[in-house]
Length: 85
Image: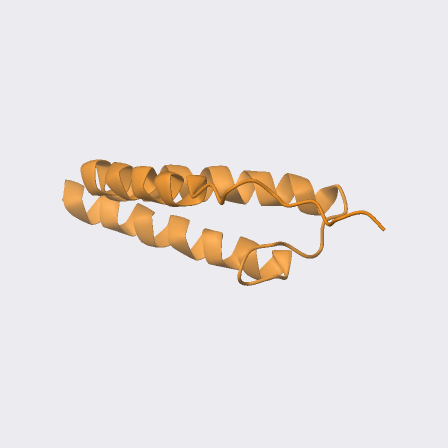
C-alpha cells in the first residue's frame, strides 16, 4: 500500500476573488453587479445548453442559478435607471 498523497497547503484564491468582486461592486455599484450577473448568466446558459444540470454553486440546480442571476440583473438595472432619474 502506498501512503495517501497529501495535497499542498490550501490556497484561499477564492477569497481573493471574492474580495476583488466586492471591491468592484463597491466602486462601480449596480453597474458591476449588472456586469457580473450578465457574465454569469451567459456562462451558465452556455453550460446548461452543453448539458450541465448540477452546479457546484450553493443553489446546485442550474435553473435556480440562472433565475438568481436573472433577478440580480433586473435589480441592478432598476437601480441604474433610478440613479439616472
